[in-house]
Image (cartoon, rainbow, N blue to C red; front, side, top):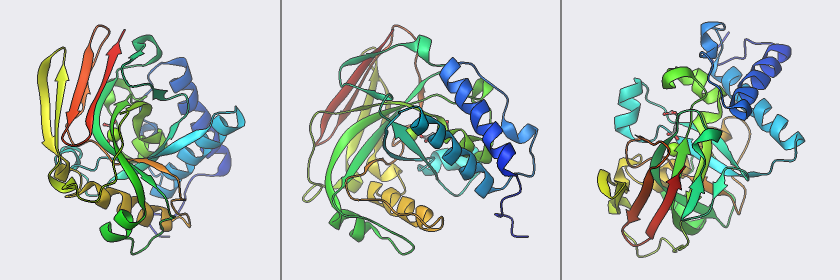
Length: 267
Ligand code: 0L1
Ligand code: MG
C-alpha cells in the first residue's frame, strides 16, 4: 500500500469532519486527530477537509476561494516539513477592510500578511509554472488571513492541520487591486503594524520565492487529486510574514508596496 493511500473508512472520515467542523462553529479547541488515528494518510487528511467543505455547503455556505498555507521556508522549517498545504476560504470568513473581528467567535487567532490572486483562466497541473500563473492572473490584491487552529495551543502535525482546513478562519482583502504586470512581485515589501508598532516585515519572496509559485504549486497539488483551479478563483498565497497572535483590543494594519494597506480591529 502506498503511504498516501486512504486508510480511514468513509464513516470515520465523516465523523472526524463533523468533529472538527463543530469545534470551529462552537469555538472550542480539541486535541489533534492523529492522536487517535496515527496511521491516517495524506489522502485521508484531504478527504476530511473535503467532507468539512461538503458539510458547510449543505448548510448554504459559499466557498469563496482557496488558500495555500505553510508557504514560507521559515514556517516550513519551523514545522519540519517541506511541502505547503492547501485549504479553502468561505463567504462568512470575509471581513471588510477596516472592519471589526469579534474574538469571541474565534479560539486563538493569529494574523498573516498575504498576497491574493484572482484568476481569469483555469490553471491545472502537473507542470503549472509561475509564467502560466501570471498569464492566467486577472489581478492581485493585498490580504490579511486570520488563522485559528481548532487544535489546543496550535499544537498539531501536518495531517491534522490539513484535515482542519489549514486553520482557515477569516480574511480581509484590500480595496485596491492591480494587474501584476510591471510590478516586481518577488521583491514586494510588506510591513505589519500591531497597535501602531511594527511587528513583522517581509518581502513577498518569502512565499516560495515568488507568490505566483504558490498558485502554481496549488494547481499542481490539486492536479494530483484530479482537480484544477477554475477561472475566477480567489487564492490566498500564504503568509509572507510570520503569524502574529492577536486579542481583543488589537488594531492591525499591513502596508504593501504598490498595493496599499489593509486594516482591521479585534474586539
Ligand atoms: O495559512 C497558513 O499558513 C496556516 C497553515 C496552518 C498552520 C498554522 O495554523 O499555523
Ligand atoms: Mg495563511
